Length: 105
Image (cartoon, rainbow, N blue to C red; front, side):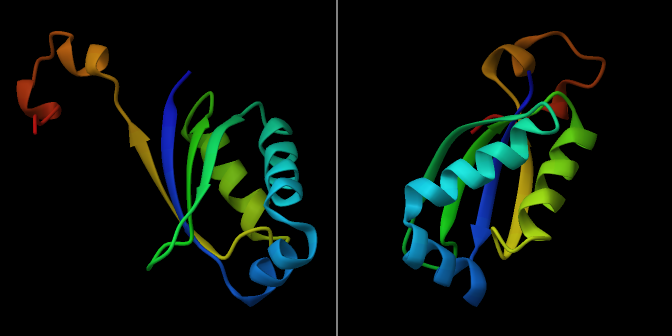
């Protein structure tokens, strides 16, 4: 199942919810939203800085990932999010017609 790296910034309502319910309850709510479209939250990390939350999400496809994004932002579980489709080393190692499709670091 494809993995997505998610960066999130919390607006005022999600911050209030996290303070009131705690990070564990907030994760449970986000996990429930993800599972409703066949996705799974692998991990969530709270952070200091420009972004407040980082997560790894397993989702069947881009449409499911978009559904998770909307299902966590619409009810105020998160503020804004940026989603990045992650490629494994194996995916980047497979022969491609365009070898530049996977850049190396």
